[in-house]
Image 1: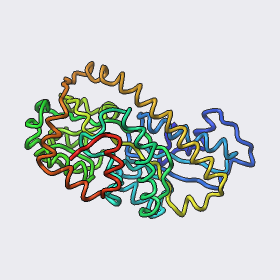
Image 2 (image 1 turned 135 degrees about the vertical axis):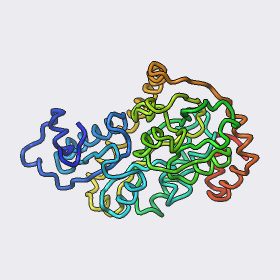
Image 3 (image 1 turned 90 degrees about the horizontal axis):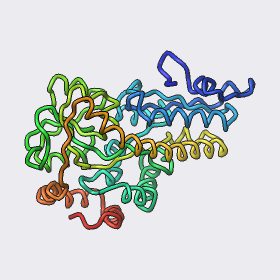
Image 4 (image 1 turned 60 degrees about the vertical axis):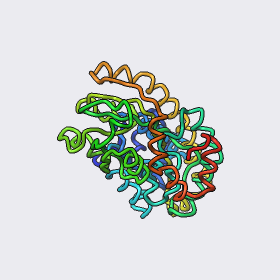
Length: 336
């Protein structure tokens, strides 16, 4: 039930899911698109399709949301650009990707900041998330939904040696998203970060253009990176999530009742997606071990010490501003 360039829209997906729409409602007044870079079989896309089916049903067929996964419409930065220009109507940038045009969006993705979800959700569903949403709405030509979807805590995978301490990162060629916060994080840890879109990662690892990458474990299994990586180092170095955003003009074209239907469907389905990721995190580690990957734990204090010594936290406080940084430290404690 994934739309492709050649196949069905979510109107058809909804029909396959036995959503019965009246004949007069089959032609949607508003047919909107969202692209993702996430592999087709990831819970993120499954839940987006569910949200689209719900929108079609609750709007009586007046609105549909077509989902194009697996970089069909381009990489994360391409999708963000298309949504801002109006070429597509929705996008799903992570905080790090969005930070390429709005630096403060990366604040949740500072290195070794959140220790667990008990810190993440009160911050991102609360005052810190509200502050970022206001900045997105004011400065990006995008309208963010209220609830973030979960991407997860990021781990490091490598092909040549495990990362057990900060010293193991020195000189390591590591793929990162094209996001300033992640690039500077690994520069501060003395690695050699290489920015590229997710769709390029598998081949870059396979050909040893890079020796490792960092992503949540759900992305490792969905992207079949276990075929080209050997070691998984549980660093939990960054948490990030997806901001579901609409192009401002496309959102304004929707009548108020359709805005309410779409926002509610995306926010409530996003909450279910969070549960999906929590359950997936419990099972994927076993799955990756069964596929031959070797796991090791790490201690965050050594990595934080290196980041403090490199000036990482001080630099980013200056870039993101005292107001945002104070909101972050309210939830996680003093960083610098």
